[in-house]
Amino acid sequence: MRLIGWSYPLVMLLVIVGTGNHFFFDAVGGALAIGIGFAAASWVEPARRVKRWQPDRGSAAATC
Image (cartoon, rainbow, N blue to C red; front, side, top):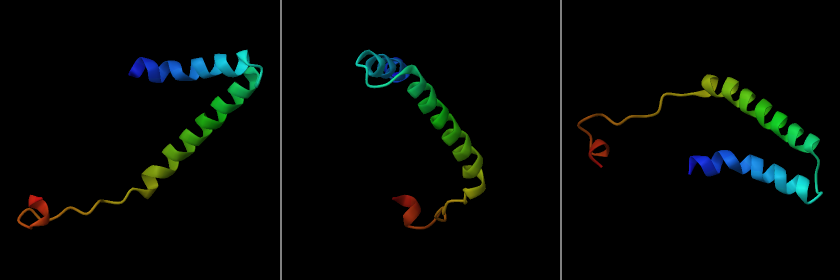
């Protein structure tokens, strides 16, 4: 499954360029947008992390 996941962007690039719907610069722009979004999310997310509620060991919620 990992191989399929990693090959998906390459296959999509070949399809969009092969069908004439887009050009390589569109793919580069898309990759750049994904990279910027990933970097921004990685920078923002640690600041938003809140300790999740954990039930007490002896409570009924802990035994579910």
